[in-house]
Image 1 (cartoon, rainbow, N blue to C red):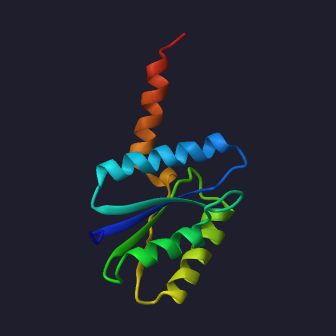
Image 2 (spheres, rainbow, N blue to C red):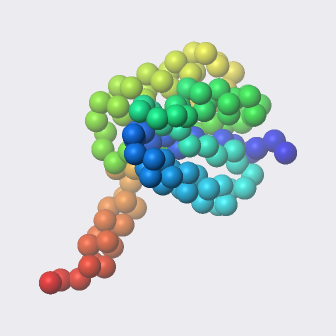
Length: 127
C-alpha cells in the first residue's frame, strides 16, 4: 500500500533513553490515528535516528506526489526552530526537488496547547 501522506515527528533528541521511548510511543499512537500514513520519529541531534536519515528512508517509501510533513515536537522557538530546522528542510528540498516537504509550526504555537496547560493546572486543584 502506498501511503497517502508522510509525517516525521522531530524532537530535539536526548542522551536519555527514556526520552526516546516517549517519542516512539507518540509515533505509535499517531500511526493508529492515521493508518494510511507513513509516520516516523526523528531526532534533531544527540541521538539516532537523526532527521536526515529518517527523511531519506521516508523518501524511499513514498512517491513524489505524496506530501511529507515535518512536525517539530518543540515548545519554544529557539535557535533550533529558527535556524537549524529550516536549514535542514531547505537542504532536503534542494536535494529532493520533486518532493513536497512541508514544515509545520511547532507545538508552542498551538492554541490547543494553551488549553491543555490550563487543564493540567486546573486538574491539580487549589491548595
